[in-house]
Image 1: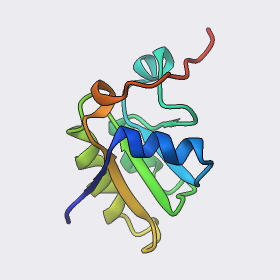
Image 2 (image 1 turned 90 degrees about the vertical axis):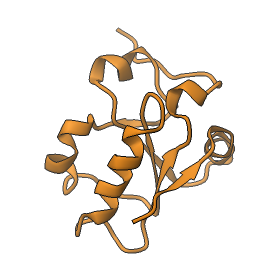
Image 3 (image 1 turned 90 degrees about the horizontal axis):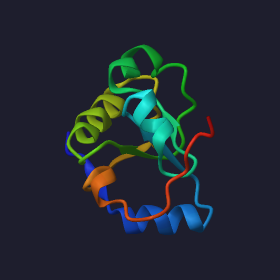
Length: 109
């Protein structure tokens, strides 16, 4: 299965336009808390298999990671699950957080 990538610029445009995009951040909770794509949901990579059935998947899902490599694997994993609808479009954020040049949302301690 080939994983499509979405540029950080396109993702930002969709989020700013209130398009229904679900961002799944597969980094650790500590990395996530220090700053993430606004509205992202933290599902660490090692928790994906056990949580995939608990997540309400949107039609468009974008997976984010530090450099855009793990997110490709995670997107493949998500796309292969039976609980994820066939109409769900799963993409990886190209370049990961290294390429995200926009403001990050941080969890207030």
